[in-house]
Image (cartoon, rainbow, N blue to C red):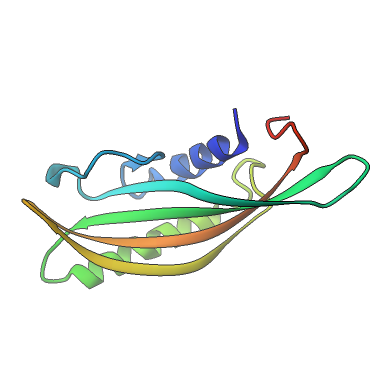
Length: 139
């Protein structure tokens, strides 16, 4: 199993205490599925940190999207969702040894209006750092 999969799984398990979680890009949201969380890892940069044993330092972008049903207090709901996500991530430590470091980079909120779906999303971008062996990321 690739480390990205292990990291997504560990973080999704922790975030399940906030709302139902999908740890992969999923089909469009359904109105009856709110609130929920989606997370995905679209980008990763790698650099060698040692020559002899050929260790690699990897820095991966992790996006955590928190969705809530739109209402008069949408911004307050999105802030509350972002707070719960941040608290869980901060309390997760190294997520069972899968990460060396995780830090919040930015948060963006938006309103979604597509057909019957009236919702808001708060997207938290985290930088996740972990190490692997060259050519054997799952070792």
